[in-house]
Length: 174
Ligand SMILES: CC(C)(COP(=O)(O)OP(=O)(O)OC[C@H]1O[C@@H](n2cnc3c(N)ncnc32)[C@H](O)[C@@H]1OP(=O)(O)O)[C@@H](O)C(=O)NCCC(=O)NCCS
Image (tube, rainbow, N blue to C red; front, side):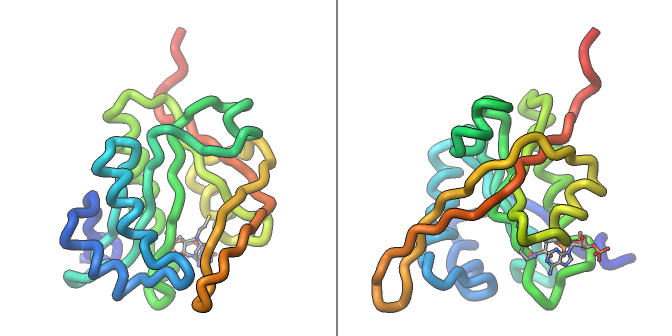
């Protein structure tokens, strides 16, 4: 059995949230995993988790309501977006990220989506190279706006220069 086969992918369950907090902590965003699980419960997201040896190895969420950035919505509307992709540092480069992306595509196809999109920061060329290798094509540059809270409780607003990429999941009609 190769290393990719040892990765299991499934949607988050309530009891997984404390394990995510422990294995993939989000400093400055202590409720990140709980927030994504809540979005899944509300029906606007699916929080996919990758597992290795019984513990979380990585995660990413499909946002069924699409990317919030207006520049992206102008180009692709509410095309589902796969975001929040992260793999534990010691497990990177072993196919976990690819397995999460392929699982997200499968889910999107099952729901009848023709495309899946994802965003990548201009400061992250390795991730961009992975996405392009997996069939994603750059569509539009946009600014990803997000907030976080430092350990003193002070809020910070960030704005990252990103590119949105899209992959077609179904054969074009006609
Ligand atoms: C990007 C990331 C999710 C890919 O997951 P992965 O399991 O490492 O990816 P895979 O093993 O399926 O594919 C390997 C490819 O991922 C990319 N990659 C590997 N390590 C990476 C890292 N530390 N940062 C960014 N991309 C990386 C490379 O393109 C790599 O191919 P290469 O080894 O030929 O250069 C993962 O590396 C990660 O969590 N990086 C830090 C967080 C991040 O950049 N998230 C994406 C935000 S858009």
